[in-house]
Image: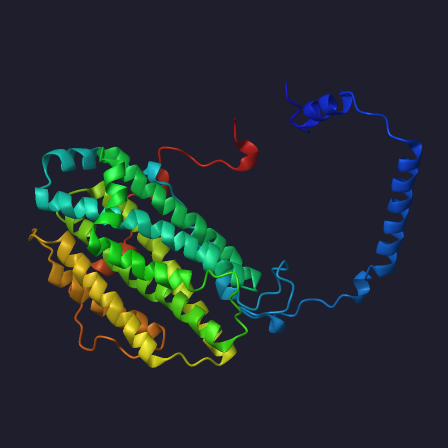
Amino acid sequence: MLDWENPLDKFSTELNSAAMPAQDNSVEKAIHAEQILNKQNKTKNSVSVSDVQPVKADDKRVINGATDINQLAPFKYPWAWEFFLNANRNHWTPLDINMSKDVHDYQHRLTLEEKHIYENVLSYLTTSDILAMRNIGLAVMEKMTAPELQIYQARQVFEEALHTWTYQHCIESIGLDQGEIYNRYRVVPEINQKIQLANQRINSVLRADIDLTNRDELENFVISYTFFAGVFEGCWFYNGFSPIFALQRRGLMTGTAEQLQYIMRDEVLHCAFGIRTVNQIILENNLKLDPKAIAEMWLEAEAAEAEYAHYIMRDPVLGYSAEEHIEQFRYIANRRAKQLKHEEPFPGAENKLGWLDEQANLRKEKNFFETRVTEYQTGGALEW
């Protein structure tokens, strides 16, 4: 039986009791002398605690900072800590939401055109959230030199994984062919194009030799982060849930839509945090991004979104169209551009889906945390 105070103790005892060749006394003496010498050197070279200067908030920087990355406070960016606290208030799992009605709707109520929309939206989202997780976890977070930013981004990585679990839960609940759904992003050009645009951005800043003290490298990193915060999460995700929400408004696939509402609340925070961080980096480094590169980014994103919309809504469905989807993308893109202090990429774009913002701000009549199937417990109360 394992000793839970030291679960490896049993194995350590067995290892120590095994037959070992006897050591020569001269070897033991040499090892002992080396240990004494190492202790003396450490004492000689150690720095007194009183000589260490405390971290000052004013010395912190988002990137290329020189302060202790392991010391959280004092905060220079208290807003980043507030993002972390707010993210934890939206804690949930896909198992909290009943999917039985969705199974019935998919089997008996959805048209072939509506099934096409539902399946392909899930197919795009499954890959996208993994890509978003890799971007924050591998391309962005490690470059932050203020821990209050890293702590929120660690939560963001977890949330992207949670979102991927959510899509997988929907796929399993409905009984869809997992291999076929997951593989669509490889074989459907209209889905693949969006993924490849994102891959190009992330790959350009995942290089081992990247040097963010170089102005050109820094500008490329900021444009990449701008793409993921403003376009990928701020527009493609924000607008990308709307076909499912359109079904929900007609009483269809309401379980899936409720899951996406919680995801959307996360994504709103991801987008807002990313945009604020980008603006802070630009301010601290006195950067001036190339307006042509920014304009091309928005145009590329719109072209990819238009082809995607025409594919998933190739046939008309009640209450939603590809044209509305594309125009709503342009409207949201103008909003994100304004937050990023860019020129409007699509002047005059109209808000075609006035109800979309309600999905992120919706206050449900039921108390979500009182209707959960499972109550969360603190670590000390868990029963294994």
